[in-house]
Image 1: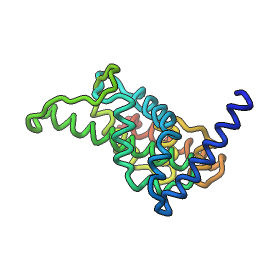
Image 2: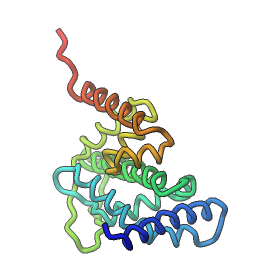
Image 3: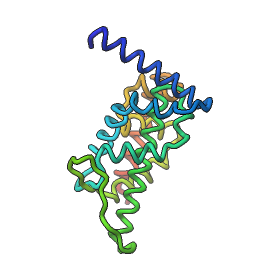
Image 4: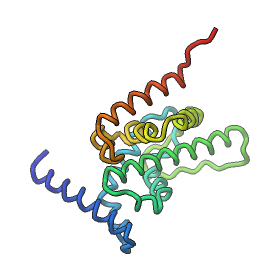
Length: 196
């Protein structure tokens, strides 16, 4: 990465932290000025989350970002810096996908008349397997809270160990340990040992 690009990135990261603090303190318009600085990161998170899904989707990255930002609401102000904000955003995106999966499952099972609606920016849109998303959500609920956060940041957010450690206020070693334990638990959850 070129030096001028690195300097710009560092300024943006510092500005994100400043704007989050300003929003927390109630400065009008701080969140609106924050959005352009994190929008590309949010789209990257959304594309990553949608990439884990199979089949036809009714959400695309832009729609997922917008719905997640609405779900975030004041939760964005709880973030202390860029990494923490992205961790919170990854959780909001997972919640949007789980809600969407529940709606899809209910519709498949005759949960009332519904009309297919897509929120797109002109790009293709397809559905995903709602049962798989709900099973994953159920599995994540069985993890210890910090392990769940590590999985959300890594799997859904595409964050590196260093970013996760910064977002959660722990060491990278703790992140690696939590990731290893969470993966093992999830593997046992989805592939239990045969009994008998």
